[in-house]
Figure 1 (tube, rainbow, N blue to C red):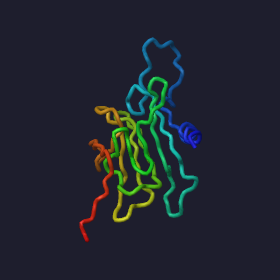
Figure 2: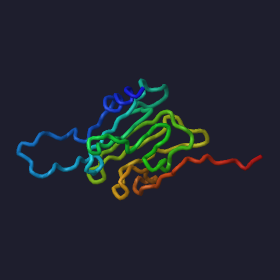
Figure 3: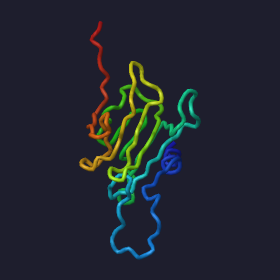
Figure 4: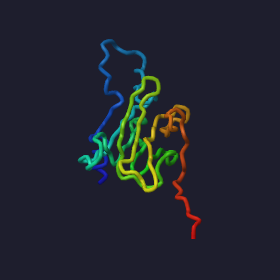
Length: 171
């Protein structure tokens, strides 16, 4: 199982930060400019577990059961963002994550020259009792981690250490 996860991490869908980098024609004396993925000095990779086929009644796209952003930290890869049943970073659950577990997501992304990579996650199946709009996720350089964004995709939102299910007061 672990080797499958590792294989999927690096083989399934890999968007390398340096995918557009070519060999320099002149010797470079200064360190190379950091990749534009998230505007950090660390190399990052986005890997996903794609759904094998598009479910009936679902608009085609990048449909995933899991997505991970891993970062190369001194030769060791560490996970800095995870999308599985919920959206998480090392500090906790991202704001806007549905309380009910999500079994599949539509992933869309946008590369912005100023802000870096912007990811949009939409549950494939809407949870009972409501509609969940796309959840925007982007690297927050101030706190140095991925965080979700408000409905206008402009302001960062904090994390929750645990997802609390509301308790009913009806008896």
